[in-house]
Amino acid sequence: MALETALETGYGFWDPLVWILAVAIAAAVAYLIWRAGEEGYKRGTAQTEAFLSGNVQPEKGAIHVRAGNLYWGFLEALAQYYRRTVPVHTGVLNDYVLWFLGITALIIVIIGLMP
Amino acid sequence: MNGDLIVQNAPALLIAVPLLAAFSMPLVGRISRFARNLWAVLAMGFTAFFAAVLAYAVYTTGTVIYVFGAAAPHLAIPLDSGGIPVRIVFTVDAMGALMELIAAIVGLSVILYSLAGDSGRSRLESYYTLFLLMITAVFGMVSTGDLFNFFVFLEISALASSALVAYRIDHGRAVEAGIKYAILSTLGALLVLVAVGIFYGQYNFLNIAAIASRMQYTLLDEIALALLVGALAMKAGAVPMHFWTPDAYSMAPSSVTAMLVVTSQASLYGLFRVIFSLYNITLNASTVGWIIIVLGVLSMVVGVTMALPQKDVKRLMAYHAISQTGYMLLGVGVGIAVLNDPAALSAFGFTAMSGGIFHIFNHAMYKGLLFLTAGAIIHRVGHQDMNRMGGLGHTMPFTMVFFIIGALAIAGIPPFNGFASKLLIYESVFLFNPLLSIIAMVVSVLTLASFVKVFHSIFMGPRLPEYTEAEEVPLSMLVGMGILAAVVIVFGIFPEVVVNVLIEPAARALVDQGGYIAAVLGGA
Image (cartoon, rainbow over all chains, first blue to last red; front, side, top):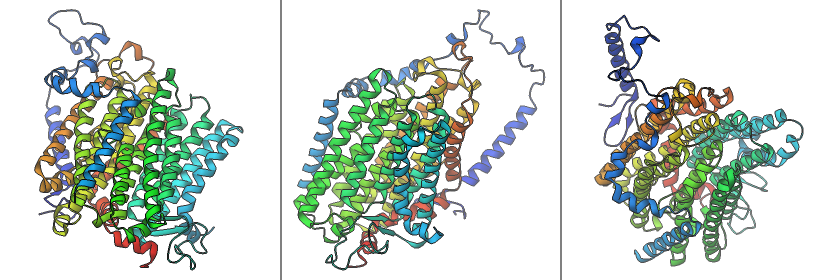
């Protein structure tokens, strides 16, 4: 049953206050677990440095995974889709105008033909 | 001026204040930088105040009519006009009032943000003049009850916006984007003007309520409808007429981009106003509804998939703006499709419409916030290329927090406002057609994925040597972002209050064509 504060969706309901309460309880439990953890951690000492199988740590800029390298697999999987959609975005104003007028003409035809 | 006079004249003041401030800005700017900034803030502050006053009046007492040049502001029909409202009439119902609240909140945030964010630019008097003209145009578009006036404000919006898109010049790239936007907008406005001409030729007047009361839905009306749908959907950035959007949004100064989102939504408002208030049950609701739904689905899918591979942060966000517009079109489109079926409208159509309208509000807030955070980042690093960014979370913690709030909201993650409106759309659209709802949910997942990429690329990772000097942005920029972030959070935590108080009355006002006509013509 929906609470007083719940948003009725017509199909169910959503109460953000209950959700926030659940997250707060989960955060409190996580904090308690963290509190019970290792106490010997010292920020800024050698123990916080990354261990890369004995290799020298690369430059800071080389560690960061850049935007162009993210979701490579996803984009490859959809390569067929992107091969068709990206070239449509030509950046040429004439194409923009043609798309606009073409779609408007299509809307005229659809609305005109439908009883 | 006493309180009643302010309330009575709020629709006119909404236009007059930013218009006068815009044209006096070059003079005030000659006094000092401080005077110019103060003038801009005061103008926007008073405009926002009048918008809030008007919205309160509309939500408490019903549709407000303002007639320019009449003996009393609410006298729409002169005694000797034969029952025709011949003067310029502003008709502000709950839907118009909601749009005015959106423009007021975003406009105020953007002006505060601009004080520091755009302080390094030259010719700021021109910048603020154009910005205030843009504000005037938006308020005009959502207030007017007259089709020709709508066209005029649409043109003012296009002229001011295209000049602002070109404002940075940026080796000619911004100018090119501005020209593209100007030409497409002019072409769109021309189609609107042709539609206006068709109405005038048939009915001899241009008042929306008056035309609606005599609407025949002839072949000419059908052509006018198609022209208006095409032009206004293009202005809203619907796929496949969206091509100008990434160019214009990415090249404009970020503060302008946040406001461009609102102008696009004013066009979307125009589209819904035409369909519901002008045509309503006379049109073939199923056909027009499905046209809007198809445009919405295309916008959602193409927008988000084109956003994923982008490396320019603002271009990526621009594609997401297109994608989010798709949700609004989908929600309201479902409402249109079942407009002639009272049972379906009551079962899920009205909720879908409420979700779409709620999403208009939410989108303006979180997308405005995201564009402002992008501007804050660009302000510090000097470019828009995410491939060259990283580690900024160390030096720009507040901007990062604001970005996280905006990103989670746009991805529909609870408890932020985007989730509430998307949930309304998912569940109600599911009852109409489950496949559409599933597509909407998948698009949300891809949106989240895309913003994880942005977050990681810009804020995560070690502090990069090239940005050791980068620091948090000035206070006024943080205040601008903070206002929008606060709205995103509050509207997400108390969605039921927002829906009951603001959204449902707006949706009801849209559907109730008889009420709109009666408010202007008084049952004539």
